Length: 307
Image (tube, rainbow, N blue to C red):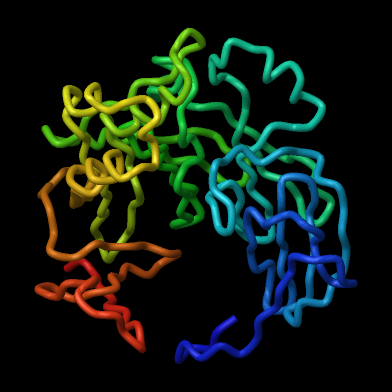
């Protein structure tokens, strides 16, 4: 934890076998419940901690978070003391894994806290790419933001921004983001595809990365896509290797969109790489500065708003 000036005021190593530790599993997500409680989750258990990292309760999770990311993924959030999870109930896991991956399962779930019972759930919208083109996608969990008591969801693999009522998860609006020529739709992995096919399909496609509300504007951004012929030229064993990562660095750069009143005003590249956490839009470098030029002793954050 850090204070308003960025000074670390408390830290704890939760991995281990001590009284307040989580065993040998890395955490998947961590969220503040209030000013005096934190919830930490791995794939098997839910841990409640005080703000001083004293364990309040450990319970077996009734669900499995669906994500490829650990240490801060998008598979759970806290909104108004409700716990959102992008997950499959443990009781449904066997049938889910035996299904044809038609993506009709209600992955989005709102739970009461701390009892973890489902109070509302929702499947992917019928207009989303995951329903129109069923199969397996590397990244499915949406980026979520709460605004004006509504929940906004941006799915990485689909080019719409969806609005839900909260906490009942009724779909109430859809904004077509209509990305330009730099966007290439990711294709799903099918059962007869070769191993690692999903990584190559993602390389040749675009994921939406994030979105941000600022004043009366909406900003979204997505990754560019590598040309299909260059992806096809990579050997299957190259995933994560130098040849593969060189193509990632060359083509998987962000492209930004700005909207006002659902009308797209602009789309293109920026000199800085933006990040959005809660209601803050920021970068780790300023325009004209190479963030990798020198190793810094202090990291400066640059905050932005749209006007």
